[in-house]
Amino acid sequence: MTRMDKHDSWIEPTRTVRTIEHLLLFGAAVLLSGCGWMVQAAQTMHLRGYDKNISDATQAIANARDGAARAHAFSTRGSAYAEKARYSRAFKLVTADEYDRLFQLAVKDHDQAIALNPGSTEAYYNRGQAYWDRGSQDEFEHKDAKSWFDHAAADFQVSTERDPRNYMAFDMLGMSHQENGAWEQAIGDYTREQSLNSKLGTARLADAYCGRGQQDAKNKNLEAATADYEKSVELGSNTDGCSCEPYNSLLVIYTQTGQYDKAWKFVHWAQTSKHWLDAELVEYLKKNSGRNS
Image 1 (cartoon, rainbow, N blue to C red):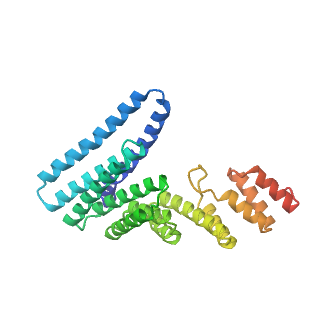
Image 2 (image 1 turned 90 degrees about the vertical axis):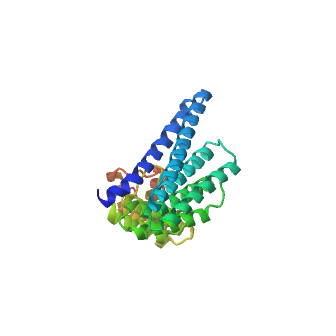
Image 3 (image 1 turned 180 degrees about the vertical axis):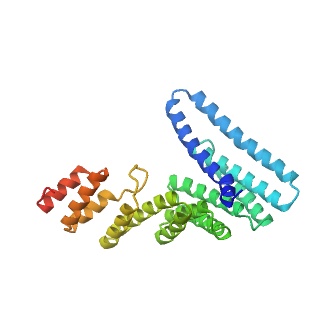
């Protein structure tokens, strides 16, 4: 088994399953909105699954023959507590106090795992994921989440140092920095990730350059914003509505700064490349440039 295979065994399935879980649960909530009992049954099934994972991990802790095995079991139980907390809070099944209690149980287990096996990349990664989830939930609830993302970044940083080939640790490190607006650090993290996983790293970089471009534009630093948006476009920024979209923003800057030749060249490229541009912005360019192409 390669080192990357090891990573995939405890990281990739978790992220994939959680992504599918979110999609299925969201779809179920929409489709079954008129069948409350079915939604409740699905939620009960999920919670029982988390409780079983907690129970199994508790048994594994008791049966562990050495510190490494016990640390793994604590880390597994910590992740189960964190997942239960995340799911329960996201679907408003628990109070804020119960959410805090479950989260503290998760952190306590992760701390114990690290104390038992401080050399474990897995333990740091899993604790970082718990902090990341807490930050994401608090952010969703319009609370200050900076400290949680800082904690997450610290753990993911350790993960990258322990295993520099772990591209998912760089991915989560970059996302933690990005959430706190540390764009330079995030771009550095994603650049490292790109060398390990070109597809994912490039997508993250495109989004990060676009995000920093938005910050540059907000700060009236149009030269820096232009450079960042252009870099995002060069990397093939996604236009799926979930990522930062640099194309229209770049057209606005070109037009506002009188770079009409560049603007029209960009419009023609976008049309050929099937990248959507707002028709009103193209009309804005026509009006300001006095040209139609």
